[in-house]
Image (cartoon, rainbow, N blue to C red; front, side):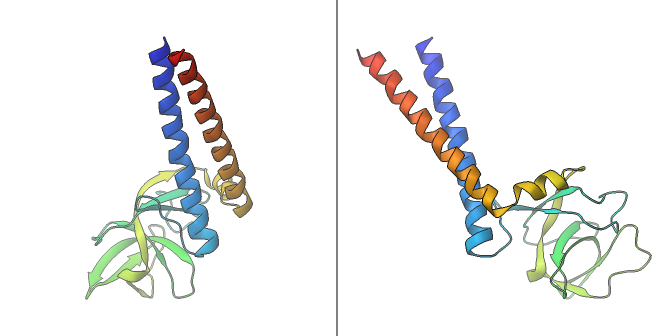
Length: 169
């Protein structure tokens, strides 16, 4: 039973440390560097437009992965010339530039997208999760979650040491 308890405690510590790393990484990139935060090559956006219906709805959370290149029919998120994040389907590639179009739009996008403006390829769409995610993106919430994770980690280490003391006696 003591071995099982120790294994559970180690696994919980690893999970808490993982989430602490993600929280600190997101907070640092977003607050300090003022960049779109990536963790393990992934980032996310909340879809606010209807141009990708029915594939992506308003309020859906879109998870994208940074890749070396993209191909026709990939759905990508990119920065527009107006500094907005847009998510559309690649319809053609010419001289390293991507031409895109929203699935429900009648016409192609006017601008060609340079690879440096592409955040990544859509790998997952989570329906109706945008409002919850927007709340979680609040800068102060990052700090709060970080404090909770750090406190939980200290608590787990305390329990671990306490249990090791019992095992040694």
